[in-house]
Length: 524
Image (tube, rainbow, N blue to C red):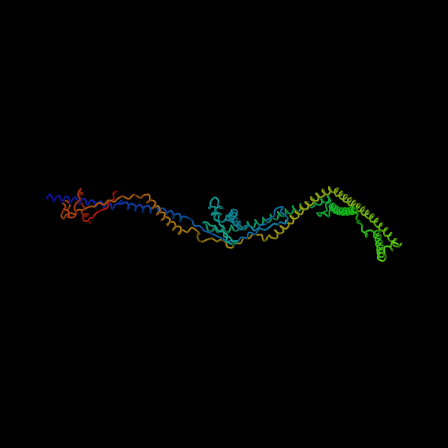
Protein backbone atom coordinates (compact mmCIF):
# COMPACT_ATOMS: atom_id res chain seq x y z
CA UNK A 1 0.00 0.00 0.00
CA UNK A 2 2.78 2.40 0.89
CA UNK A 3 4.61 1.64 -2.35
CA UNK A 4 1.47 2.13 -4.32
CA UNK A 5 0.81 5.38 -2.59
CA UNK A 6 4.35 6.49 -3.11
CA UNK A 7 4.17 5.76 -6.85
CA UNK A 8 0.87 7.46 -7.08
CA UNK A 9 2.32 10.48 -5.34
CA UNK A 10 5.22 10.53 -7.70
CA UNK A 11 2.93 10.17 -10.72
CA UNK A 12 0.66 12.87 -9.43
CA UNK A 13 3.65 15.17 -8.94
CA UNK A 14 4.88 14.54 -12.45
CA UNK A 15 1.44 15.18 -13.93
CA UNK A 16 1.09 18.48 -12.10
CA UNK A 17 4.51 19.59 -13.36
CA UNK A 18 3.61 18.76 -16.97
CA UNK A 19 0.27 20.52 -16.77
CA UNK A 20 2.00 23.64 -15.47
CA UNK A 21 4.44 23.57 -18.37
CA UNK A 22 1.61 23.26 -20.88
CA UNK A 23 -0.24 26.14 -19.27
CA UNK A 24 2.80 28.35 -19.37
CA UNK A 25 3.45 27.52 -23.04
CA UNK A 26 -0.16 28.20 -23.96
CA UNK A 27 -0.14 31.51 -22.11
CA UNK A 28 3.13 32.48 -23.80
CA UNK A 29 1.81 31.77 -27.28
CA UNK A 30 -1.41 33.71 -26.74
CA UNK A 31 0.32 36.77 -25.20
CA UNK A 32 1.15 39.86 -27.52
CA UNK A 33 4.65 39.77 -26.16
CA UNK A 34 4.98 36.10 -26.82
CA UNK A 35 8.36 36.42 -28.61
CA UNK A 36 10.75 39.08 -30.06
CA UNK A 37 9.79 38.11 -33.61
CA UNK A 38 6.13 38.73 -32.92
CA UNK A 39 6.87 41.98 -31.17
CA UNK A 40 9.09 43.11 -34.10
CA UNK A 41 6.40 42.25 -36.65
CA UNK A 42 3.77 44.16 -34.75
CA UNK A 43 6.12 47.18 -34.42
CA UNK A 44 6.87 47.09 -38.15
CA UNK A 45 3.19 47.04 -38.99
CA UNK A 46 2.45 49.94 -36.64
CA UNK A 47 5.36 52.09 -38.00
CA UNK A 48 4.56 51.32 -41.65
CA UNK A 49 0.85 52.09 -41.35
CA UNK A 50 1.49 55.25 -39.34
CA UNK A 51 4.13 56.66 -41.72
CA UNK A 52 2.17 55.69 -44.82
CA UNK A 53 -1.07 57.18 -43.51
CA UNK A 54 0.52 60.52 -42.55
CA UNK A 55 2.55 60.89 -45.77
CA UNK A 56 -0.29 59.76 -48.02
CA UNK A 57 -2.80 62.07 -46.34
CA UNK A 58 -0.39 65.04 -46.56
CA UNK A 59 0.42 64.42 -50.22
CA UNK A 60 -3.22 63.99 -51.23
CA UNK A 61 -4.28 67.08 -49.31
CA UNK A 62 -1.53 69.09 -51.02
CA UNK A 63 -2.36 67.66 -54.46
CA UNK A 64 -6.10 68.29 -54.38
CA UNK A 65 -5.83 71.64 -52.56
CA UNK A 66 -3.91 73.29 -55.43
CA UNK A 67 -6.12 75.47 -57.63
CA UNK A 68 -6.22 74.70 -61.37
CA UNK A 69 -4.17 76.85 -63.74
CA UNK A 70 -5.07 77.74 -67.31
CA UNK A 71 -2.73 78.67 -70.16
CA UNK A 72 -3.66 81.04 -72.99
CA UNK A 73 -1.25 81.57 -75.89
CA UNK A 74 -1.04 83.59 -79.11
CA UNK A 75 1.35 83.70 -82.07
CA UNK A 76 2.62 86.96 -83.55
CA UNK A 77 5.07 87.82 -86.30
CA UNK A 78 7.44 90.66 -85.37
CA UNK A 79 9.30 92.68 -87.99
CA UNK A 80 11.26 95.21 -85.91
CA UNK A 81 12.38 97.13 -89.00
CA UNK A 82 15.74 98.88 -88.93
CA UNK A 83 17.21 101.69 -86.90
CA UNK A 84 19.24 104.50 -88.45
CA UNK A 85 22.83 104.40 -87.23
CA UNK A 86 24.11 107.96 -87.65
CA UNK A 87 27.73 108.82 -88.14
CA UNK A 88 29.60 110.80 -85.53
CA UNK A 89 29.37 114.62 -85.69
CA UNK A 90 32.72 114.86 -87.46
CA UNK A 91 33.58 111.52 -89.12
CA UNK A 92 36.26 110.96 -91.69
CA UNK A 93 35.53 112.22 -95.19
CA UNK A 94 33.39 109.89 -97.25
CA UNK A 95 31.72 108.06 -94.35
CA UNK A 96 27.97 107.65 -94.41
CA UNK A 97 25.28 106.39 -92.05
CA UNK A 98 24.33 102.76 -92.39
CA UNK A 99 21.14 100.84 -91.57
CA UNK A 100 21.37 98.07 -89.00
CA UNK A 101 18.55 95.67 -88.14
CA UNK A 102 17.27 95.92 -84.61
CA UNK A 103 17.99 92.76 -82.61
CA UNK A 104 15.04 90.37 -82.65
CA UNK A 105 15.81 89.05 -79.17
CA UNK A 106 15.71 92.58 -77.81
CA UNK A 107 12.13 92.89 -79.02
CA UNK A 108 11.26 89.72 -77.11
CA UNK A 109 12.49 91.37 -73.92
CA UNK A 110 10.49 94.51 -74.70
CA UNK A 111 7.37 92.41 -75.36
CA UNK A 112 7.27 91.11 -71.77
CA UNK A 113 8.76 94.19 -70.09
CA UNK A 114 7.06 95.91 -67.17
CA UNK A 115 6.05 99.11 -69.06
CA UNK A 116 4.16 97.08 -71.66
CA UNK A 117 2.50 94.86 -69.05
CA UNK A 118 1.61 97.86 -66.90
CA UNK A 119 -0.04 99.63 -69.83
CA UNK A 120 -1.95 96.44 -70.69
CA UNK A 121 -3.14 96.07 -67.07
CA UNK A 122 -4.42 99.65 -67.11
CA UNK A 123 -6.44 98.84 -70.23
CA UNK A 124 -7.83 95.70 -68.53
CA UNK A 125 -8.75 97.57 -65.35
CA UNK A 126 -12.39 98.27 -66.20
CA UNK A 127 -13.28 94.67 -67.07
CA UNK A 128 -11.10 92.71 -64.62
CA UNK A 129 -10.66 95.20 -61.81
CA UNK A 130 -11.68 92.80 -59.02
CA UNK A 131 -9.59 89.89 -60.34
CA UNK A 132 -6.55 92.08 -60.78
CA UNK A 133 -6.91 93.58 -57.30
CA UNK A 134 -7.04 90.04 -55.86
CA UNK A 135 -3.51 89.37 -57.13
CA UNK A 136 -1.97 91.31 -54.25
CA UNK A 137 -0.02 94.49 -53.61
CA UNK A 138 1.81 94.43 -56.99
CA UNK A 139 -0.46 92.79 -59.58
CA UNK A 140 1.73 93.99 -62.45
CA UNK A 141 4.68 91.89 -61.25
CA UNK A 142 2.41 88.88 -60.76
CA UNK A 143 1.00 89.15 -64.27
CA UNK A 144 4.44 89.82 -65.74
CA UNK A 145 5.82 86.67 -64.11
CA UNK A 146 2.97 84.67 -65.68
CA UNK A 147 3.98 85.74 -69.21
CA UNK A 148 6.50 83.87 -71.37
CA UNK A 149 7.67 84.68 -74.92
CA UNK A 150 9.32 81.88 -76.90
CA UNK A 151 10.56 82.42 -80.48
CA UNK A 152 10.00 79.75 -83.10
CA UNK A 153 13.32 78.47 -84.36
CA UNK A 154 14.46 79.98 -87.67
CA UNK A 155 11.50 82.37 -87.97
CA UNK A 156 10.40 85.75 -86.65
CA UNK A 157 7.24 84.27 -85.10
CA UNK A 158 6.87 84.49 -81.31
CA UNK A 159 4.55 82.52 -79.06
CA UNK A 160 3.31 84.67 -76.17
CA UNK A 161 1.67 82.67 -73.36
CA UNK A 162 0.11 83.58 -70.00
CA UNK A 163 -0.59 81.17 -67.16
CA UNK A 164 -3.07 81.85 -64.33
CA UNK A 165 -5.98 80.63 -62.27
CA UNK A 166 -8.46 82.71 -64.33
CA UNK A 167 -8.75 81.55 -67.94
CA UNK A 168 -10.51 84.70 -69.17
CA UNK A 169 -7.94 87.00 -67.56
CA UNK A 170 -5.03 85.03 -69.07
CA UNK A 171 -6.44 85.25 -72.60
CA UNK A 172 -7.33 88.96 -72.25
CA UNK A 173 -3.86 89.71 -70.85
CA UNK A 174 -2.12 88.10 -73.85
CA UNK A 175 -4.23 90.01 -76.38
CA UNK A 176 -3.85 93.34 -74.57
CA UNK A 177 -0.09 92.92 -74.23
CA UNK A 178 0.17 92.34 -77.99
CA UNK A 179 -1.97 95.41 -78.76
CA UNK A 180 -0.03 97.58 -76.30
CA UNK A 181 3.33 96.42 -77.64
CA UNK A 182 2.26 97.17 -81.21
CA UNK A 183 1.17 100.72 -80.31
CA UNK A 184 4.32 101.44 -78.33
CA UNK A 185 6.53 100.05 -81.09
CA UNK A 186 4.91 102.30 -83.71
CA UNK A 187 5.05 105.29 -81.39
CA UNK A 188 8.72 104.67 -80.63
CA UNK A 189 9.46 104.41 -84.35
CA UNK A 190 7.73 107.71 -85.09
CA UNK A 191 9.53 109.42 -82.24
CA UNK A 192 12.89 108.00 -83.35
CA UNK A 193 12.32 109.07 -86.96
CA UNK A 194 11.34 112.62 -85.97
CA UNK A 195 14.29 112.87 -83.61
CA UNK A 196 16.71 111.53 -86.25
CA UNK A 197 15.48 114.03 -88.86
CA UNK A 198 15.74 116.86 -86.33
CA UNK A 199 19.31 115.87 -85.49
CA UNK A 200 20.30 115.72 -89.13
CA UNK A 201 18.66 119.10 -89.86
CA UNK A 202 20.49 120.64 -86.92
CA UNK A 203 23.75 119.09 -88.09
CA UNK A 204 23.16 120.38 -91.64
CA UNK A 205 22.58 123.91 -90.35
CA UNK A 206 25.74 123.89 -88.27
CA UNK A 207 27.83 122.43 -91.09
CA UNK A 208 26.48 124.95 -93.61
CA UNK A 209 27.43 127.81 -91.28
CA UNK A 210 30.91 126.33 -90.75
CA UNK A 211 31.40 125.92 -94.50
CA UNK A 212 30.38 129.52 -95.21
CA UNK A 213 32.62 130.88 -92.44
CA UNK A 214 35.59 128.79 -93.52
CA UNK A 215 35.16 129.68 -97.20
CA UNK A 216 35.14 133.42 -96.38
CA UNK A 217 38.22 133.04 -94.17
CA UNK A 218 40.08 131.22 -96.94
CA UNK A 219 39.21 133.93 -99.48
CA UNK A 220 40.28 136.78 -97.18
CA UNK A 221 43.53 135.03 -96.27
CA UNK A 222 44.44 134.39 -99.91
CA UNK A 223 43.69 137.98 -100.95
CA UNK A 224 45.72 139.50 -98.10
CA UNK A 225 48.76 137.29 -98.71
CA UNK A 226 48.52 137.13 -102.54
CA UNK A 227 47.89 133.38 -102.57
CA UNK A 228 45.99 132.66 -105.74
CA UNK A 229 45.49 128.90 -105.47
CA UNK A 230 47.06 125.71 -104.22
CA UNK A 231 48.99 125.36 -107.50
CA UNK A 232 52.44 126.82 -106.99
CA UNK A 233 52.85 127.83 -110.66
CA UNK A 234 49.81 130.10 -110.44
CA UNK A 235 51.30 132.19 -107.62
CA UNK A 236 53.55 135.07 -108.83
CA UNK A 237 56.24 134.89 -106.16
CA UNK A 238 56.57 131.12 -106.33
CA UNK A 239 56.65 131.28 -110.14
CA UNK A 240 59.45 133.85 -110.04
CA UNK A 241 61.42 131.77 -107.56
CA UNK A 242 60.98 128.74 -109.77
CA UNK A 243 62.23 130.80 -112.79
CA UNK A 244 65.28 132.03 -110.87
CA UNK A 245 66.09 128.49 -109.89
CA UNK A 246 65.90 127.39 -113.50
CA UNK A 247 68.04 130.33 -114.64
CA UNK A 248 70.64 129.57 -111.99
CA UNK A 249 70.88 126.01 -113.16
CA UNK A 250 71.36 127.14 -116.79
CA UNK A 251 73.98 129.73 -115.80
CA UNK A 252 75.90 127.13 -113.84
CA UNK A 253 75.89 124.86 -116.86
CA UNK A 254 77.18 127.67 -119.14
CA UNK A 255 79.86 128.58 -116.62
CA UNK A 256 81.04 125.00 -116.47
CA UNK A 257 81.22 124.81 -120.30
CA UNK A 258 83.12 128.12 -120.56
CA UNK A 259 85.60 127.13 -117.92
CA UNK A 260 86.22 123.83 -119.68
CA UNK A 261 86.82 125.52 -123.00
CA UNK A 262 89.17 128.04 -121.42
CA UNK A 263 91.08 125.29 -119.69
CA UNK A 264 91.51 123.35 -122.94
CA UNK A 265 92.74 126.47 -124.77
CA UNK A 266 95.26 127.21 -122.04
CA UNK A 267 96.57 123.65 -122.09
CA UNK A 268 96.92 123.71 -125.89
CA UNK A 269 98.75 127.01 -125.80
CA UNK A 270 101.15 125.77 -123.15
CA UNK A 271 101.90 122.70 -125.29
CA UNK A 272 102.33 124.74 -128.52
CA UNK A 273 99.31 123.19 -130.19
CA UNK A 274 96.90 125.11 -132.32
CA UNK A 275 93.33 124.85 -131.27
CA UNK A 276 92.06 127.17 -133.96
CA UNK A 277 90.54 125.49 -137.00
CA UNK A 278 90.89 127.04 -140.45
CA UNK A 279 87.19 126.83 -141.15
CA UNK A 280 86.52 128.96 -138.09
CA UNK A 281 88.87 131.77 -139.46
CA UNK A 282 88.33 132.80 -143.15
CA UNK A 283 91.66 134.66 -143.38
CA UNK A 284 93.59 131.71 -142.12
CA UNK A 285 91.70 129.44 -144.45
CA UNK A 286 92.58 131.68 -147.46
CA UNK A 287 96.24 131.75 -146.53
CA UNK A 288 96.40 128.00 -146.08
CA UNK A 289 94.64 127.50 -149.42
CA UNK A 290 97.14 129.74 -151.23
CA UNK A 291 100.08 128.06 -149.55
CA UNK A 292 98.73 124.66 -150.46
CA UNK A 293 98.35 125.71 -154.09
CA UNK A 294 101.97 126.94 -154.27
CA UNK A 295 103.16 123.68 -152.70
CA UNK A 296 101.36 121.67 -155.35
CA UNK A 297 102.88 123.72 -158.13
CA UNK A 298 106.37 123.36 -156.73
CA UNK A 299 105.79 119.67 -156.31
CA UNK A 300 104.85 119.33 -159.98
CA UNK A 301 107.94 121.26 -161.06
CA UNK A 302 110.16 119.10 -158.86
CA UNK A 303 108.83 116.07 -160.60
CA UNK A 304 109.57 117.52 -164.04
CA UNK A 305 112.91 119.26 -163.49
CA UNK A 306 116.08 118.70 -161.58
CA UNK A 307 116.79 120.62 -158.41
CA UNK A 308 119.73 122.43 -160.08
CA UNK A 309 117.53 123.66 -162.83
CA UNK A 310 114.86 124.75 -160.44
CA UNK A 311 117.41 126.59 -158.34
CA UNK A 312 118.36 128.69 -161.34
CA UNK A 313 114.72 129.43 -162.33
CA UNK A 314 113.62 132.86 -161.10
CA UNK A 315 109.92 131.93 -161.15
CA UNK A 316 110.53 128.97 -158.90
CA UNK A 317 112.59 131.02 -156.52
CA UNK A 318 109.77 133.62 -156.38
CA UNK A 319 107.16 130.92 -155.58
CA UNK A 320 109.33 129.51 -152.82
CA UNK A 321 109.74 132.97 -151.33
CA UNK A 322 106.01 133.51 -151.59
CA UNK A 323 105.36 130.16 -149.85
CA UNK A 324 107.67 131.12 -147.00
CA UNK A 325 105.92 134.43 -146.62
CA UNK A 326 102.51 132.69 -146.59
CA UNK A 327 103.67 130.25 -143.91
CA UNK A 328 104.82 133.14 -141.75
CA UNK A 329 101.48 134.82 -142.21
CA UNK A 330 99.69 131.57 -141.35
CA UNK A 331 101.72 131.16 -138.16
CA UNK A 332 101.11 134.76 -137.22
CA UNK A 333 97.42 134.40 -137.94
CA UNK A 334 97.22 131.23 -135.84
CA UNK A 335 98.83 132.99 -132.89
CA UNK A 336 96.44 135.88 -133.24
CA UNK A 337 93.44 133.49 -133.47
CA UNK A 338 94.60 131.54 -130.45
CA UNK A 339 94.98 134.69 -128.40
CA UNK A 340 91.62 135.87 -129.57
CA UNK A 341 90.05 132.50 -128.60
CA UNK A 342 91.63 132.66 -125.17
CA UNK A 343 90.34 136.17 -124.68
CA UNK A 344 86.85 135.16 -125.76
CA UNK A 345 86.90 132.14 -123.49
CA UNK A 346 88.01 134.25 -120.56
CA UNK A 347 85.31 136.78 -121.28
CA UNK A 348 82.73 134.02 -121.54
CA UNK A 349 83.82 132.54 -118.20
CA UNK A 350 83.72 135.94 -116.57
CA UNK A 351 80.27 136.65 -118.00
CA UNK A 352 78.95 133.28 -116.86
CA UNK A 353 80.33 133.82 -113.38
CA UNK A 354 78.77 137.23 -113.22
CA UNK A 355 75.41 135.83 -114.31
CA UNK A 356 75.54 133.08 -111.67
CA UNK A 357 76.49 135.59 -109.00
CA UNK A 358 73.67 137.92 -109.98
CA UNK A 359 71.05 135.14 -109.97
CA UNK A 360 72.26 133.94 -106.61
CA UNK A 361 71.99 137.43 -105.21
CA UNK A 362 68.42 137.66 -106.45
CA UNK A 363 67.58 134.32 -104.94
CA UNK A 364 69.23 135.31 -101.66
CA UNK A 365 67.31 138.59 -101.59
CA UNK A 366 64.01 136.75 -102.22
CA UNK A 367 64.74 133.94 -99.78
CA UNK A 368 63.17 135.69 -96.80
CA UNK A 369 60.11 136.65 -98.84
CA UNK A 370 59.84 133.10 -100.16
CA UNK A 371 60.02 131.62 -96.66
CA UNK A 372 57.30 133.92 -95.41
CA UNK A 373 55.20 133.15 -98.46
CA UNK A 374 55.78 129.43 -98.07
CA UNK A 375 54.53 129.60 -94.48
CA UNK A 376 51.46 131.54 -95.58
CA UNK A 377 50.95 129.14 -98.46
CA UNK A 378 51.03 126.11 -96.11
CA UNK A 379 48.58 127.85 -93.81
CA UNK A 380 46.36 128.60 -96.77
CA UNK A 381 46.61 124.95 -97.83
CA UNK A 382 45.57 123.76 -94.31
CA UNK A 383 42.59 126.13 -94.35
CA UNK A 384 41.55 124.81 -97.75
CA UNK A 385 41.82 121.19 -96.51
CA UNK A 386 39.66 122.04 -93.49
CA UNK A 387 37.14 123.67 -95.81
CA UNK A 388 37.15 120.54 -97.97
CA UNK A 389 36.49 118.39 -94.89
CA UNK A 390 33.55 120.58 -93.82
CA UNK A 391 32.13 120.42 -97.33
CA UNK A 392 32.47 116.62 -97.30
CA UNK A 393 30.67 116.42 -93.94
CA UNK A 394 27.91 118.64 -95.29
CA UNK A 395 27.47 116.40 -98.33
CA UNK A 396 27.42 113.29 -96.12
CA UNK A 397 24.74 114.80 -93.90
CA UNK A 398 22.62 115.66 -96.91
CA UNK A 399 22.98 112.12 -98.25
CA UNK A 400 22.04 110.62 -94.88
CA UNK A 401 18.96 112.82 -94.67
CA UNK A 402 17.89 111.82 -98.17
CA UNK A 403 18.49 108.16 -97.37
CA UNK A 404 16.57 108.42 -94.09
CA UNK A 405 13.59 110.02 -95.81
CA UNK A 406 13.66 107.49 -98.64
CA UNK A 407 13.88 104.45 -96.32
CA UNK A 408 11.10 105.58 -93.97
CA UNK A 409 8.69 102.87 -95.16
CA UNK A 410 11.31 100.12 -95.18
CA UNK A 411 12.37 100.93 -91.60
CA UNK A 412 8.83 100.95 -90.25
CA UNK A 413 8.24 98.05 -87.80
CA UNK A 414 5.30 95.69 -88.18
CA UNK A 415 3.51 93.32 -85.79
CA UNK A 416 1.16 90.76 -87.34
CA UNK A 417 -1.12 88.57 -85.19
CA UNK A 418 -0.89 85.08 -86.63
CA UNK A 419 -3.13 83.49 -83.98
CA UNK A 420 -4.97 85.41 -81.26
CA UNK A 421 -5.39 84.07 -77.73
CA UNK A 422 -8.67 82.35 -76.84
CA UNK A 423 -10.13 81.40 -73.46
CA UNK A 424 -8.87 77.90 -72.59
CA UNK A 425 -11.60 75.38 -71.70
CA UNK A 426 -9.38 72.78 -70.00
CA UNK A 427 -6.92 73.28 -67.21
CA UNK A 428 -3.24 73.21 -68.08
CA UNK A 429 -2.00 72.08 -64.70
CA UNK A 430 -1.97 70.37 -62.27
CA UNK A 431 -2.78 66.77 -63.31
CA UNK A 432 -4.48 65.60 -60.13
CA UNK A 433 -4.55 61.89 -60.92
CA UNK A 434 -0.90 61.79 -61.90
CA UNK A 435 0.20 63.82 -58.88
CA UNK A 436 -1.98 61.67 -56.58
CA UNK A 437 -0.38 58.48 -57.93
CA UNK A 438 3.06 60.00 -57.45
CA UNK A 439 2.11 61.02 -53.88
CA UNK A 440 0.82 57.55 -52.94
CA UNK A 441 3.89 55.86 -54.42
CA UNK A 442 6.19 58.29 -52.62
CA UNK A 443 4.30 57.73 -49.36
CA UNK A 444 4.68 53.96 -49.74
CA UNK A 445 8.42 54.29 -50.30
CA UNK A 446 8.71 56.73 -47.40
CA UNK A 447 6.85 54.34 -45.10
CA UNK A 448 9.18 51.51 -46.08
CA UNK A 449 12.17 53.74 -45.44
CA UNK A 450 10.87 54.81 -42.01
CA UNK A 451 10.15 51.19 -41.09
CA UNK A 452 13.65 50.21 -42.11
CA UNK A 453 15.21 53.04 -40.07
CA UNK A 454 13.14 52.11 -36.97
CA UNK A 455 14.22 48.48 -37.23
CA UNK A 456 17.86 49.53 -37.50
CA UNK A 457 17.68 51.37 -34.15
CA UNK A 458 15.55 48.63 -32.41
CA UNK A 459 17.59 45.57 -33.37
CA UNK A 460 18.52 43.22 -30.36
CA UNK A 461 21.42 40.88 -29.97
CA UNK A 462 20.40 37.24 -30.53
CA UNK A 463 20.03 35.20 -27.23
CA UNK A 464 21.01 31.52 -26.86
CA UNK A 465 18.15 29.01 -26.97
CA UNK A 466 17.90 26.40 -24.18
CA UNK A 467 16.30 23.10 -25.03
CA UNK A 468 14.63 21.59 -21.92
CA UNK A 469 13.46 18.03 -22.39
CA UNK A 470 10.27 17.70 -20.42
CA UNK A 471 9.00 14.15 -19.67
CA UNK A 472 5.30 13.99 -19.02
CA UNK A 473 3.76 11.34 -16.73
CA UNK A 474 0.55 9.84 -17.97
CA UNK A 475 -2.08 9.21 -15.27
CA UNK A 476 -3.24 5.64 -14.65
CA UNK A 477 -6.80 4.91 -15.41
CA UNK A 478 -8.90 5.48 -12.37
CA UNK A 479 -6.27 7.71 -10.77
CA UNK A 480 -7.89 11.13 -11.15
CA UNK A 481 -7.28 14.17 -9.05
CA UNK A 482 -7.95 13.31 -5.52
CA UNK A 483 -6.36 9.89 -5.96
CA UNK A 484 -2.87 8.61 -6.62
CA UNK A 485 -1.40 8.40 -10.05
CA UNK A 486 -0.16 5.18 -11.46
CA UNK A 487 3.44 4.47 -12.03
CA UNK A 488 4.84 5.54 -15.36
CA UNK A 489 5.25 3.02 -18.08
CA UNK A 490 8.51 1.33 -18.60
CA UNK A 491 10.84 3.19 -20.90
CA UNK A 492 9.77 6.64 -19.59
CA UNK A 493 11.63 7.09 -16.36
CA UNK A 494 10.85 10.03 -14.22
CA UNK A 495 13.69 12.48 -13.89
CA UNK A 496 14.90 13.07 -10.46
CA UNK A 497 14.03 16.37 -8.96
CA UNK A 498 11.19 18.28 -7.55
CA UNK A 499 7.79 16.94 -8.49
CA UNK A 500 5.57 19.37 -10.36
CA UNK A 501 2.71 20.75 -8.35
CA UNK A 502 -0.77 19.41 -8.84
CA UNK A 503 -2.83 20.87 -11.66
CA UNK A 504 -5.67 23.09 -10.70
CA UNK A 505 -9.23 22.03 -11.07
CA UNK A 506 -10.60 22.11 -14.59
CA UNK A 507 -7.26 21.41 -16.14
CA UNK A 508 -7.95 17.80 -16.89
CA UNK A 509 -8.65 18.66 -20.50
CA UNK A 510 -5.05 19.76 -20.99
CA UNK A 511 -3.88 16.34 -19.92
CA UNK A 512 -5.69 14.77 -22.83
CA UNK A 513 -3.55 16.74 -25.26
CA UNK A 514 -0.80 15.10 -27.25
CA UNK A 515 2.37 14.91 -25.22
CA UNK A 516 5.15 17.20 -26.34
CA UNK A 517 8.65 15.81 -26.30
CA UNK A 518 10.41 19.08 -25.80
CA UNK A 519 9.84 22.86 -25.97
CA UNK A 520 12.07 25.73 -26.86
CA UNK A 521 12.05 28.39 -24.18
CA UNK A 522 13.51 31.82 -24.44
CA UNK A 523 16.20 32.41 -21.90
CA UNK A 524 14.72 35.76 -21.14
